[in-house]
Amino acid sequence: MLLLPALAASHHFIRQAVKPGDVAVDATVGNGHDTCLLAELVGPAGRVYGFDIQPLALSRAAERLAEKGLSGRVQLCPAGHERLKEHLPEECRGNVRAVMFNLGYLPGSDKTVKTKAETTVSALAAALDVLAPGGIITVVIYTGHPEGKTEQEAVYEWASRLDQRHVQVAVYQFLNQVGNPPSLLVIEKSL
Amino acid sequence: MLLLPALAASHHFIRQAVKPGDVAVDATVGNGHDTCLLAELVGPAGRVYGFDIQPLALSRAAERLAEKGLSGRVQLCPAGHERLKEHLPEECRGNVRAVMFNLGYLPGSDKTVKTKAETTVSALAAALDVLAPGGIITVVIYTGHPEGKTEQEAVYEWASRLDQRHVQVAVYQFLNQVGNPPSLLVIEKSL
Picture 1 (cartoon, each protein chain N blue to C red):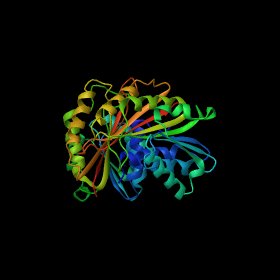
Picture 2 (picture 1 turned 45 degrees about the vertical axis):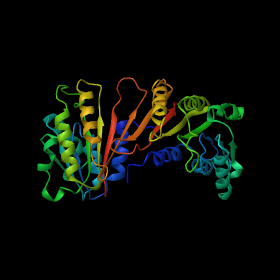
Picture 3 (picture 1 turned 30 degrees about the vertical axis):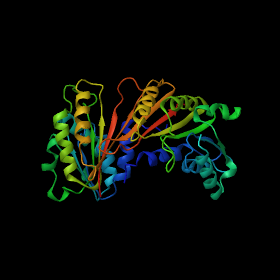
Picture 4 (picture 1 turned 90 degrees about the vertical axis):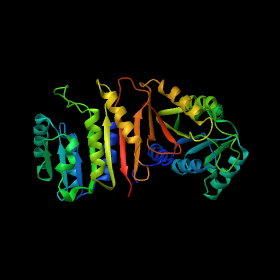
């Protein structure tokens, strides 16, 4: 299939953007799949910072990273992604190659704990702030749960006002699918 | 830049879809750039059918194809794309790997002659009809000219009603650009 689902499309962009030795951020660790991808791409000389407020998410991710021998290059932070800037070492700010967001709730967990419009937008602004020139932010957005539509609207509204001289914002989404398939937003900082 | 403009993104999908020996259609020949791309991708064993109602477009395209030594594998048809089905040989119907649409008017020409919502939608339906399983249609849509918005709405409306069991439809567009940048619609027929 040529038309990738949103999550796979986000990986397509991340694989192009992240190189060995880079610094990257997983803003929504969840079960750690994206954290592992980033850790593999940055290699042993790179560094990944992962954020999640749920202990269950961080313990699952830590286990997955350990299984793959990737723990040494990843720092998991038990904090909301809206605080990502303060958790990054000074030398990483303005030097982050990619930040991944996978919104909604942790699969197989308490569905009342999920990302929210206000903190998501704060986190996106913080992510843009620490991004290196030429770096990207990917945001996979789910609208199938209550509040998902509101979150999507808030994210689109914020992103559509970004100055095109400094940032490009594109969306990729399916038009004809029932069941609210996720959409992908990609934000690229100009060089 | 990782985020390709709509036209370049359409080429990205076409390069993945079209292989040597394939049959492909350029539904809006214009200056023949996309016709040349398709002719190169199908190779000497393949076949490209190109449609345009403007003699100037077809003569420019014929010249470009001749310069590149690609004329032998391309048939240029002086007809509107809504009639593409009747111009394709029987054995090509249901066997077309890709159809490219680049809507709007012919660059550097009479801007009153442009694609229109009604015939564009008829042409898309005809293109979908002749497409091979796994084949794709790319549509680059310009909304910067009068009637462009109406055409985009008609195309989106038609495409969003396609049955997802047989066809996938995705859109790719920029969110934060002034000046109405084009958007890309990709239609993929299921295998």
